[in-house]
Image (cartoon, rainbow, N blue to C red; front, side):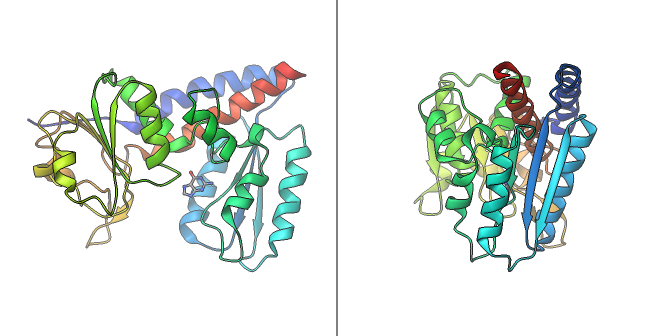
Length: 285
Ligand code: GUN
């Protein structure tokens, strides 16, 4: 079997067009969606992510604010900015780019953001709401994966889903979202004894580990849907996922390439969350 690609770039463009249209409608009613992004330090990857987030806002007709701090900034200064943005009714989403320098307690920073403006979906309140199956801001990457599955009419209900990775950003929320849609979910991680035993049972396999090409074709059930959240460099410095695309695409039915798969969906769902926050602000006004 040769897998078909799930084109995250094309889906992302389609969803962003809808978002831009709705943003224009909200703006005409007096509420222009606005995302504030905080970047601390000079991590080059973070700088690229933040630049793409700001560019995504502008293209969708959102207002965006960017606040950059040197790596040695006093945490109080960042907490003060978050408090100011929480109080600013023209700001609908607040995002602090991770990772933060070591003088920061990241959990405390994320929890300083008002849950109503937590468009990353990282606040414990939003995470708790997700766990209980209630309305919340969903973390953007796993939500983007759910959109991709939906766009391909992948049957989640009753499926065996295996998620590799247990991070708060991807693995854990991904597992909960699949569970909410009726999948039987197994979460694998670095301590899992026989990874291939689990992955070979998966109708839907999500890899979010951060290890280049670690999931090979022999670990995949024929016809499985393979979602690759990884973003790594291979031995030649080329961008690649956690899945060995060459061998996996011979076995799977659907697969996300890297780049051009899950990646573009993350910022799209961030825009969707910010739009939703702006809509709630308008309804409350
Ligand atoms: N660092 C890596 N991914 C993310 C993300 O989705 N949001 C934020 N704020 N930081 C990140």
